[in-house]
Image (tube, rainbow, N blue to C red; front, side, top):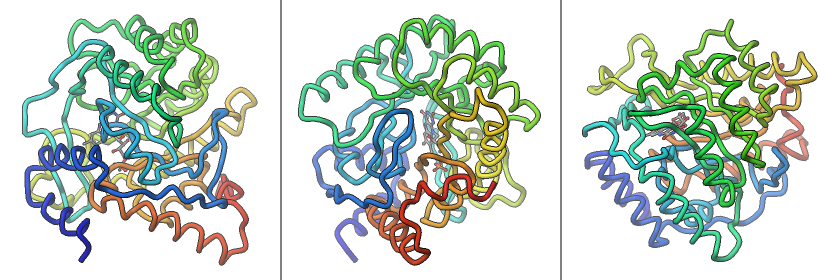
Length: 351
Ligand SMILES: Cc1cc2nc3c(=O)[nH]c(=O)nc-3n(C[C@H](O)[C@H](O)[C@H](O)COP(=O)(O)O)c2cc1C
């Protein structure tokens, strides 16, 4: 057993939020290692940005931008920090993060605990003042629980952080901020994107919930493209609970992530990709697949279903930094065996 495996095993025995804090501290100290060796078959471009590989760290892991560079050095192709809110807020009372190890899943109801945009931007400014970041950086934006005005707030957030980011994500899909997911209508997304467009020049992605009805997707896609967004992240955590979900915490309120989310988020991505391809205005949207990805097969399946990039969180929380070299090497081996030069060549092949 390696020192890293031992550390992971120890972390799994303590309260998950505390374990996450300790893991972040270890990462910040550079204890988790580095994997920056290029894998040419995995390099890709999207949203006008170059990615050494398409595997990103999803929002929520580094909400306050405290370990961006060490996380990038682990080998992620990109890192999305946040969700960041306009004003600092502490989020929901603890406990608010639960493991479901039997399902390789988690339930969280953090409710956007955020240091606020000013503190996070100050951190990003210092980060950018150092040497060039090894990978693209996304900033995920959300609204405060109280006194929110979504159109005003998303525009202000975008204006504040655009000097420090490579892309922005408009998070309309976390289940733990009352009313947030109601913003997922064509009209409201249109108003938010147009306010952001007036102050921002970065690519903007919209992150959707897996619980949206399939019938609502065509109008949403049209509004997202019309509003000038560069793409979508499909998807956030779910409030649905698959029948027979195992684990002592399976009944907790919050967003479910990890393996039980895999089928729905992949099916939703495939549907979004099919709908997007149908119309000229939506056909150039960048699609990021997220939800339940944990091995090379999942990544290939998501790319075949139309993803340009993927993101993961829960599998990384379970497997630790060793996950990245394993994913990259398994992907490269699989592509070589099938005689495929680049993972990106498989994009949309299952549609
Ligand atoms: C503990 C936890 C916190 C999260 N916080 C955020 C967040 O602040 N903003 C966001 O957009 N998504 C957040 N997410 C959702 C993830 O970014 C991702 O979309 C979701 O977990 C599905 O991916 P996974 O199955 O690989 O975890 C969070 C997920 C977890 C598990």
